[in-house]
Image (cartoon, rainbow, N blue to C red; front, side):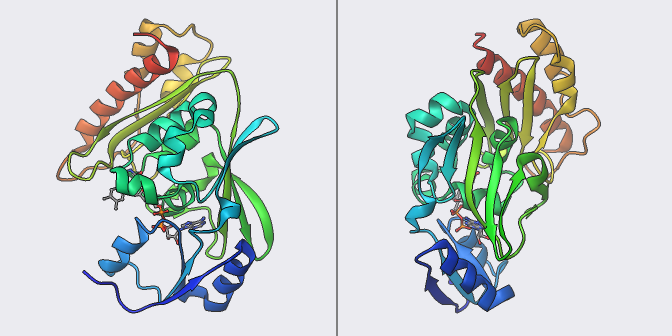
Amino acid sequence: MIPAEFDYHRATTVDEALTLMQQYGEEAKLLAGGHSLLPAMKLRFNTCTHLIDIGRLKELHYIREVGGDLAIGANTTHAEIAVSNLVQQKAAALAQAAAVIGDPQVRNMGTLGGSLAHADPAADYPAAVLALDATIHVKGPEGERTITAMDFFQDLYLTELDEEEIITEVRFPITDHPSAYLKFPHPASRFAVVGCAAKLTDSGARVAFTGIANAAFRDENVEDALEGKPLNAATIAEAAAQATDGEELLADLFAGANYRRHLARVFAKRTLLKAAGIE
Ligand code: FAD
């Protein structure tokens, strides 16, 4: 299918993109890798008439250590995140999530900022971003602000981001604790039917899911069950068995809610074992 007609604007700076966003208001959309927006436009799910291309902005394209954080520019592609030694060492769950997104074409074009802004309920990054306790840095007409991962994901395709704001960077606090991400991919789309990220902490672990609810979330059942306990195969199995208790889960033709709940428990256990280095 071919999208409806639109005007194309290539921004040369973030500030120029912000000005264009204000100029065209509701008719405008940012374009980064285009691998969520363009399919949506072809299907007429999105009918914006002005595309503001920020995909080539170098100022949003980097992976570096800043103070005690790993800082990744919004335009960094999934492929770059997957193979980065720095990300693999400091935020393994993110690199592992990036490595299993879609196929090579999607990974070479799609960006971290685009994926987070799109907030597909089956996207991989949200679980990793939550478990790694990231902050999302954004710039808008009112200036810059940071949003915690916990506040960012609100509902189906809905985030805390304002219409005229641009994600500029995502920061991950660096600690010595390991992390991991695993997913059960949909066999056709490769999106997560269930995706689970875990990061160990001083007193337990942060555990987050994607693919199973309207928005990615941290699972307090599992986290509370691990709090203050030694991490071993028995404590992990016991905690993982409580995953998604009390949560209303998504159901579709491929996977009903009970099946997703079962998968969530299996993947919580596998992900925690992987993060803890227990075979
Ligand atoms: P775009 O499509 O350019 O934009 C998406 C949305 O984000 C738009 O609304 C845009 O306006 C907004 N936006 C973009 N950048 C910014 C920014 N910096 N600040 C604010 N708003 C911004 N994803 C997965 O997680 N797992 C998968 O397995 C997976 N499989 C896929 C398979 C296929 C065949 C395809 C086509 C896509 C798949 N995706 C998957 C989605 C893919 O990861 C997209 O690349 C990603 O969701 C969007 O990133 P993008 O850079 O392409 O954003």
